[in-house]
Length: 405
Length: 235
Image (cartoon, rainbow over all chains, first blue to last red):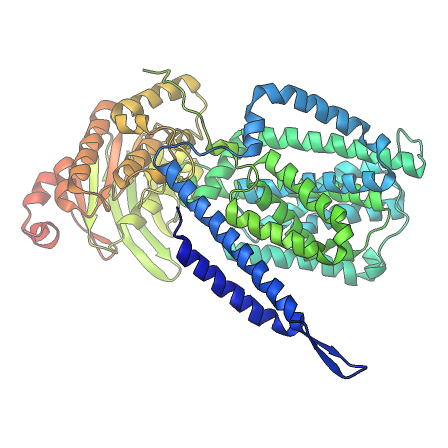
């Protein structure tokens, strides 16, 4: 059992410190009209008890985590996480997939337009997360400017539609190609960079794209953006607003499935192995005969392709784009999805995208505290499960009896 | 098999190799000994293309390879075991070995080679599903050598395989190096600080000082050479 007395003492000190810190805002209230000072001492007591309990629970969880680790080192098996257990059990997989497909299929018909819209956004972030996952999770290149490619895709559609009236389906592949092109454009100058330096350059690249869009009025219409972008059409038929949202929802579902299929294939392919080698050790990777330049560039290009395509879908969904949609916050959000979901894990990234996009929407009821809760969840996740919701499956091979000897 | 001709290599403005020449024949174990910072690792890096030389030529099997990219050089049959092992820490032993076969497509032969590796290092076969980073130093060195062997090299470049290992493990690894040389007829270029041991396994040796080659002779001659004894063998 954990040494309780000293833990209680520590938690007690924490609660004292919190009472002191929150004293000015929680206890004193100045009534300026009647020139009175209200001393709300009871708030201090709540604060004290609350922080004491939280701190104690926090310590207890940390202690459980540490001892859990010790157990697994000494040979006792650590229980796999809830998701991993579900994923590995065949008995659950079939009904679960059936239920999942049914749910996905009827979702836009039972839910209202608002819900469907949120779900489309969440699906878009799944694809964005999976795309960034190629760059960050597989190739290990920290990219903080991913939103730039998203913007490139969105503006490709916006501009081509505005000037030439090109349709959604024509521009979708063009957006992908543009994304890949800009990915390579970013890739070249950062070939020699790693880690922090790479992060800074990519961050700068993201800002450059946004600033160009904001300031080059003749080209991109500046901060006022591009309005009245056409929604996707179904074989040339223009749909009504509500049915076009449903249509977009299914387009997005198809897109997610396509992405998962391709990323999964990539992961197990030759180039996927090269990415993993590059992530682990650059010198060794070269000594194995892996072309570093090409591997890095394909990672950037293939990652950016998805952002370009989702950008096109984004423009078609909102029918209006301006540079304010492509701030650093978006990049950070997508990166959070990848890290929270578990680097390199497709299922994890998908779950994390759903949680991170849907949660703030449904937390609107607690509007003031919504970002606070969101932040707290992120911190707790990183402390207690740094490998993400679903750890990458590559790392948990099962033992198989020897076939060769 | 390999001819290095008047090679000079620079790190920026600093000249690390000054006009060095050497030759390696097929089936030989060649060792390059010298003090810290003499340019031994740079010589290997120049051959493997990781640090391309600025002057001179490197001929491998009658083909100039200086200025080629590292992956092309690996494809020609030169594999390097980098200094400090540099295995992939989060990949399992089997996956690490798999990376060594990156440029190969002949599945049957890969399987045969894998069996050969398990035979050569039984301990690795026991650890095959363990992450590379959790192996001991000696096991990591074995893994690094095995990984390079999985590329079926004609010339194996070994950079300080004894680095940071216990004497017993070092002896074991050197025995394996000799075994690889005899059984597969793999030519081995060995860079070592442990001059005594290196000269005992090698056929010929080069001595390097301040980026230049100062002596070249057969290994037994170097072992008995007074200057070498004094400077590198501590006798």
